[in-house]
Length: 283
Ligand code: AMP
Image (cartoon, rainbow, N blue to C red; front, side, top):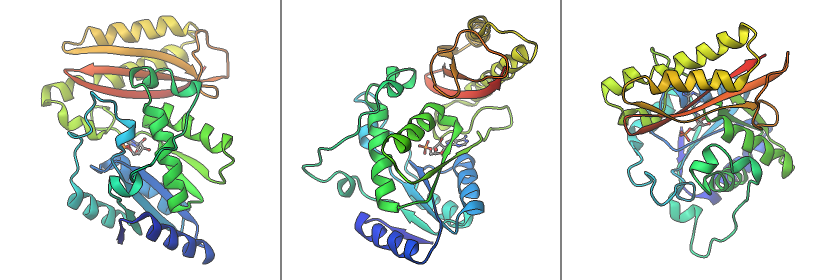
């Protein structure tokens, strides 16, 4: 595995790979690699000849009160994990080479970036869309694998690729979970062992919602309310939002139509740690 830090060098390598008819798959991460990230690498390995993993903690997607400087950066451990997972190129640039002085062009996601996570974190998805576009231009992938864990981000990236005519296939990857169902996340290290145990409630309520819909409940608002109550009655846990969206448009959904797909999105606090999770459900 080769480690590259300069965007221009990565571009030259990517261009050569393309000229040699290599299918490039990219996985973009902020590091602190875990099983979730490694499952994306596995998917890329299965469908692409060359796998590029990027590690970059993107400053412009963090708000002023967020954890940019606290974000874990165990680089040596990440290198070892990426190598053993079969990554060919690890692209890990410095912030100064991605955002040099006088950098000024950013992307605007529109409506899709304003709701849910975007409401909680204004400007977050514009920062995500900007870095994802830059990393696409640097790594020149044919395929890019993104986790369903960040469902709104995935929807925004699909829209970005369509709107800007990018010739890249977006491949969604299923959510990897811990034994109690808690979605694996770099932020889980901030949970105490008691909070980690209690955070299993989020997966339980996702399963509850699936059962309610399988039982033919069409009122999505009342399912959301049940879910909210289940979470808030768990000591130390509270909801930020519980929302059903239409899987295709990502717009708020209130009543389910037979055969249509929806996504239940949850953001909840366990202690002081904000966790997000979701599930796709067909009515
Ligand atoms: P992050 O480093 O948190 O920005 O995540 C990088 C990529 O890994 C994103 O596409 C995430 O959706 C994906 N990812 C993070 N956690 C998981 C998980 N538990 N299961 C699947 N994909 C994940």
